[in-house]
Length: 469
Image (tube, rainbow, N blue to C red; front, top):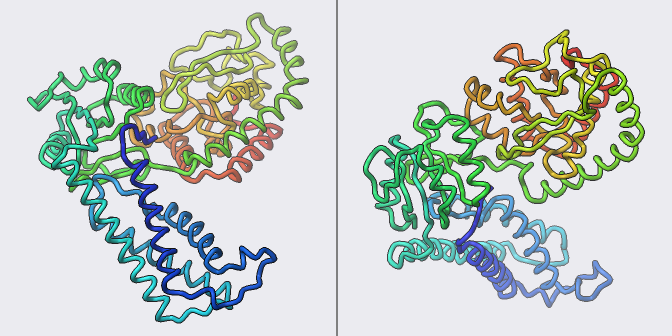
């Protein structure tokens, strides 16, 4: 998640959007004499006003296209070449949108030369305004030392040293080094890299953290992610190794220095999160009311008849951004004590007879619909691992892929589960394939995919899976 405390983008971007829309409609009013033309497409007289119709059309399509193309996503490290690329993309898209408007309302008579001149002048003014605002902010940061980001740099790597140098020399980027944690002597040195955790827990006013990811273990990175989420600062990774950078981390270039952060994916889009949450709540209520309301009493009796102990089994798992939560299941083992690092294996004598049925049909997972309602889990998502496995798995697979997996809520079921990767981990390939399917789901999420996974899960519940034991 990108946090925006203390930034000016909430003021500058709306101003630029408003300016651009005024330019488009102002020049349209000047270039085209809509009032001499008749339009009778609508019963409402106001909608037949050509200028008003173009105003509605241009505002709606400009906002849509600029959002898709991220036309206004210009950051302090964005290069002029990238801004020019954004301008060209937006220009070509709006050209198509403009001629589509002419084609849709053929009674609007516009000459080709007028249209071309309108587009060229409009984008010349918009382009100049975009570059002027870009360089004015750079000047403001460099000379007046305003619009600054308070940053912390952690690590001994060459990338960390380069980031320190960049923040110190390139004043126009607007970075102020609040603290450095390194074995080398730097400005505002506060200690060794591993000393950063206590500092980050208590220090206020931090905007961004730049961390040499190769110098930290998985558990330490987990802790940094948690601190970033808790204290609302942006966590960036500096990669030292020559391994290929996974596409699951977004790469930005500060001059020639690659800086990594968690990739934006459809499932974390604000609108999609609302859609997925509404679906989770409605589906969970349906299952609880129409299935668990009569099934739970039956299972309680069967579990109690076979063995002593609680009906429900509670276990701690890592959720979104490694946040720990209590996950619920129907007890399927004779003991409620979780053995660290031990999955249930085939023919495991700890499993009760009713437990075998529950695990084979996945009915033991049903209480997790409560976890969904309270917001710890989703109906569909990567399955949460035992805490003891989080560190172990990250040592066997690409660290960046594992971090990416914890960027969303865990699920009751998931793509890996319906593909047969569930239960006991026998080989390294098992965990690699689990993570592969989990990340594919995150990158390609859609509500239709969730429904498809739920349908296949229901089919497997009746059919049973050989991996479920």
